[in-house]
Image (cartoon, helix red, strand yellow):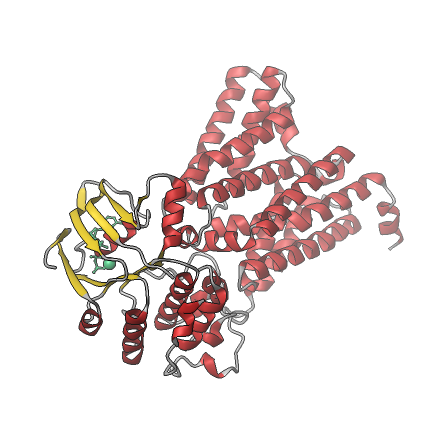
Length: 295
Length: 210
Ligand SMILES: Nc1ncnc2c1ncn2[C@@H]1O[C@H](COP(=O)(O)OP(=O)(O)OP(=O)(O)O)[C@@H](O)[C@H]1O
Ligand SMILES: [Mg+2]
């Protein structure tokens, strides 16, 4: 126990813990969006898009991180129109992934930029987080929360069915664009800050668990943040205690949590039995009276 | 509450190279109730979806009130103007609660009152994918009644009684008849057709008998 206390006194560990906490209250929500849009390939795609952006940055002398994030935002915006086709988005994300890998490798090879250097800019580590990174994470967390809080009802409809959303006055295309840009930038920045492996533990794993436990967008978002916080706190602590890199340990802990949620029988959380009489659809003899139309 | 006249002017819709709706001309008066029947695959759903901007028009136009929607904003207004009960009730890719669906029509109290009348009041906190087919249809109908209460001037209902039991079919036919807005209802049900002012029939993408 003393060891843990000593470790927590180190500034690098403190910054890492703070970074994880900020990430754990926001990235799981992005994970819920990713699961809702059925675009798990987005992590891999964005990673290579970021690499492409970083390479361009190194080539042109512009700030590589900024170039990487801009590339992520552009990629998110670029796939948004595919969401108009039914199930067009997962396919587009897969395509983007292959294009981005090929593009990044080609640009690296053509430009003669040191590939390891570019990759290093991409692979962050939670223990190497700097103060400025915490600010970036914080801004991202606020953006994810704002998007969710401002548009919760609209997002629920859009993730459920695009046409229903359109028929309910939701600006489906604009909202989809915002959603994809925020998800892509969040993933890109998180990879830079925490490392690619940790991004999965903070986005997809809690969201998968939340999918098993939640009955609506709202409850899924709450569950995902709970699972994200639990997974990162336990994982980080265990990693410090056993003196191993936080990435893999955290992923294992978060994965185990997700696996646990799968043990809950399907539907156990869906149908809270309602004792109200009206739950019996046979009793529909009461016609709706005309008052309904007089509002 | 007001109702709008609807004018389909040489509406043509395609899927790839196949023409699903072929130069359909149809006028529905303000407040009129029209039953649209016809063989399976004759283009009824496509015609209504095109009028809502959910399927592209390859030719012609659809005017509701006096507006032929062209811009994105006009289509958005069109979808507020016309309440819609789709034929394929999507249980969705993602959980949505019955209450969230009811509220999306724009008038939660009216939608919930309609849901009570249709016997699905107690289902509010259930995700849609846990409902039976008939319950799902009742919830979508209640949502549309909410949309009418919110100010829609017309209702398009695409086989709204296909999944309902006998009592439900009669009840919904009665409710639709009393609706004080323009109604176009796709139905293969004779009782529903009889309760409407007029019947139009489609075959192979064209309007046949009126
Ligand atoms: N997504 C699609 N892609 C290709 N063809 C389609 C698609 N949807 C419908 N069609 C075709 O367009 C034609 C009209 O379809 P539509 O759904 O409008 O018919 P309908 O009159 O509503 O039929 P039903 O009574 O079976 O509901 C059919 O021939 C159908 O096969
Ligand atoms: Mg049809």
